[in-house]
Amino acid sequence: MIPDPGDAVEALIQRCLQGDQLAWEQIVRQYWRKVFNVAYKFVGKHDQAEDLTQDIFLKIFKSLHTFDRRANFQTWLISISRNLCIDHYRSVRKERETIDRDVDANELSPLSHDPGPVAALEQQDRVQLLKEAMSSLPETLRTAVLMRDIQELSYQEIADSLRLPEGTVKSRINRGRTELARQIRKLRGDDFGPSRATLKRTGAN
Picture 1: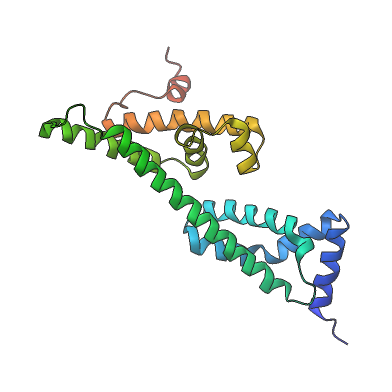
Picture 2 (picture 1 turned 45 degrees about the vertical axis):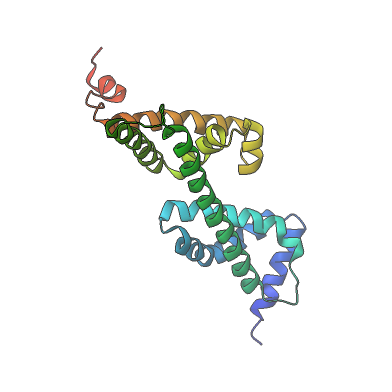
């Protein structure tokens, strides 16, 4: 008699709920590609899809006790994956809208009621420059910088929201700010000199 695949999954779930880490790793291996495919359809980039897939499995693990054993596990898992991807999409879209709103308010407000065409053009250039520089950051760094510098959240609030150690959050913010400044210089055409890494490799002082 061929064993029912559903019984095998049921056994894995039961072992997971009892704290068996190996059982959870087996579930992840078995369903990783299916969840990754869902995530990739939403973000369109391999590295971002991998990060999102990891987040999804973390949330699935925390919700495993809510799974109705009478239902199909794969159907449940894919449904949760899609819902979390939709939440992620909405969150990213909200961040972009926040950038547009806050940057426009800060950068485009004229110093006089009737700015000249040159001044208005310069203000628009600064806004566009900042947006382009922000968009070039990796999503992990961009999110950390946005939450700290735009949404003005505390390090602890960001750490809780992203489920990361506070030290990791601070590191991402610092790296994000450094990279943002570098991208702005690059877009302005100021970044012509050798980098510190290049200087170290060549032995220059």
